[in-house]
Image (cartoon, rainbow, N blue to C red; front, top):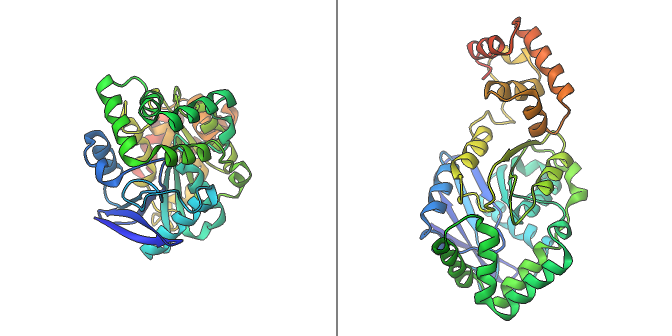
Length: 340
């Protein structure tokens, strides 16, 4: 169901689906809530991620079903204002944020400035340093193409965003972009994407955070996602194979599985009911979960952005506390105690 709220005199379209704890997705560069339904892959992705949740998505001012024309404030501050208005409109005390791509910057800024409103922070293909996305001459060439020839510019961006997609898929997304925004608005908002810089806000994020990023992402380099995970206290990083920037392109199931490991876990503000939970610290339980998934110390260290030595020490403590001599036996005992 598409609804509207007003921000600075402009109507912003937002969509609410499902039921359960709210999962709010800050808007990406351009979008179109109505035309999204024509993309079967995107529809499947959002249905899988939003299962058991009240999924809330919206179109930025100036694009999609929202009022068209140049946004009143296309800056990051304007994006955070719109996100805050959507959260307030829901009437929910706390929400989980799923920030993808440039929407990750708004999610990070909101989580840092309003920690009491954010239960969890999920980031996919996100970054904190917009100027580092690509070289200035490449950025300027892309922006100039979008402004001067939106048909050619939309095809160029389709190739960047979709990775190894078919020509038909790329042409379909090129048409989607042109339907979602005018050339002027698209270039204005894309320019802001390259300007966003939330690096100083990363240490202020208090919500449990998961960062998912494809290693060969052609739009937002993997190194930028890793920097986000390294900058947010306690954040976990899940690197995935693939080059497509959109989560519903390529191996979408892997993205869904990574996100659902957090969405399906216990809520961070609800204490565990089992007395056995007191056996392990929160960090040790995070490590145990990854051990149970079959990851090595090195792989766990990469995801949690810590050293392999630190992971080895956590695993040793887990085995000692559970009274088991091997990783496999510790996982089995943890499962028996309800710790997994």
